[in-house]
Image 1 (cartoon, rainbow, N blue to C red):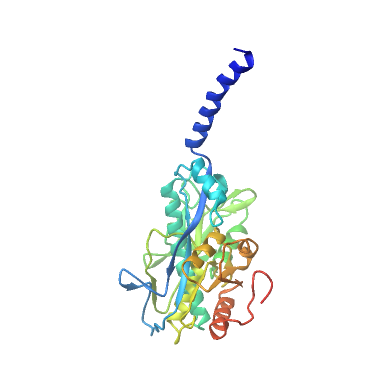
Image 2 (cartoon, helix red, strand yellow; image 1 turned 135 degrees about the horizontal axis):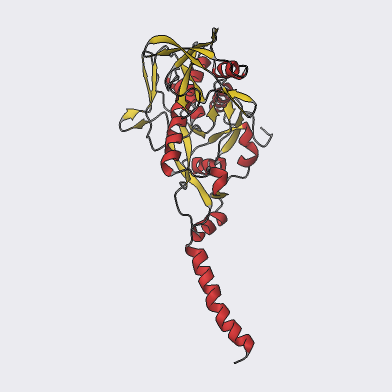
Length: 349
């Protein structure tokens, strides 16, 4: 037996062993797949998804489909066969684990974060829908959470409504954060907050981090709605990306006639407090899901347009949206005339 033959006999089992290990070992990647879509004008468990009390509603047909992405969870082991299948698929996508999740993130933490984002998106969606109808919705600023060991710990609590900071009335989240950022080093700020129905004052001295005064609390927008709107959706669905579709559905339910003229329309986008539509992840998978489920039109946040053009879209028409108002106008124009000129991701009609 020659030395070369012997080396070959030794190398082959080693190569096979390495291939087997690579085949069954978990790899640091995340797989995105088209998830289910949900008609938010429909029902779940026999109850309307958009529930309104204190205002007349109109149930005139049509479908507004929110879209989802099936994403492997932080603790899920993803192996080579699954990755190879996703790589060759025209509808799936593969991303590095650390491009999607922060180090140390668990499944539970991911779900909790998604639930918080979903709740916040529903409130903003309701406010923007009412504003589209000309209804004034006063904004209030709340403490969402307090970081352990931060200056605000033991002084501010989650759920506190910030009335004023150092005597200046707080009317929005950006303005409230701005008042904190303007604090001088070592300057104690007087927070007037509403807690359990009573107003009280607490003093918090911001700590300077990276050159910026911070109190270690997250603030978020809340609203004083003139009537009750509830979105009845499964706790298994999280994240902020359904905001635009929630807002359109609420607007549709509160106005006579079908916004979509009875046709199925899908879309996505995070709705912002100023009514703008922010970008989301998994746009290609969401477009593929909408085509699978029969949508004729898909509303794409403008900052997702470039990526959306590479989606397996079938016959779905992609429409670029910048604001909630844009979305309403485009849907109404399309419902009136399916060949109407609309803003598109490709720059055409």
